Length: 103
Image (cartoon, rainbow, N blue to C red; front, side, top):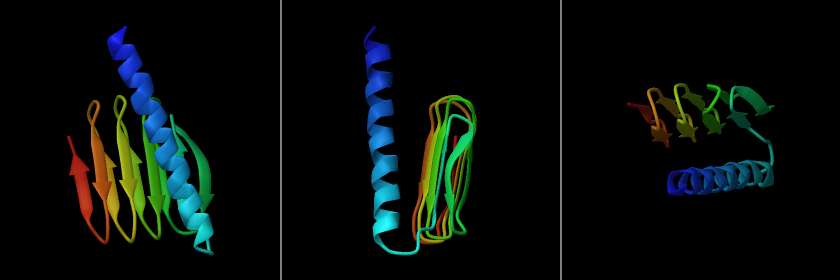
């Protein structure tokens, strides 16, 4: 029960983060954002790319790429970065030209 509550809370926090990143990208004028949730691309505007597995999430902004595969993974990339998260329950965050792969 506690694990389920923890997972639900983490999911809600991640959803809020994705909405915040999307809102910031739109507020800055030319939108360049990609959001993928549970295997489906929800938002694709500009040059950023993203993809996710059936239980994972990925967000990319400002000419970046985010890929999240495996079980319950998260990836976020901003400012010309690449983030890749593979495995199980992993998080990859890349900023300002970084190339990050976790798990």
